[in-house]
Length: 40
Image 1 (cartoon, helix red, strand yellow):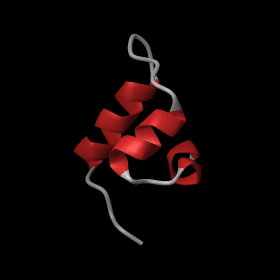
Image 2: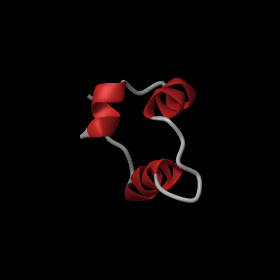
Image 3: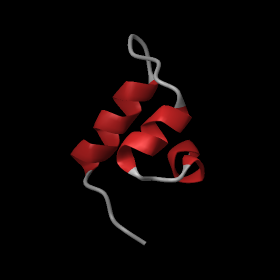
Image 4: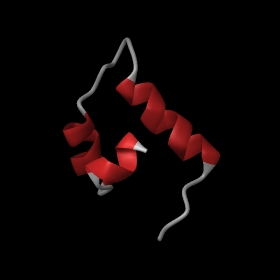
């Protein structure tokens, strides 16, 4: 299981929240992470 830096996690969370509001499926494709991981 890969470990992600805090800055990477924060950048992903910012993409999920306003004003960007990107879909989880889109972020999963861009990052190569599973949707389940992103929902955690």
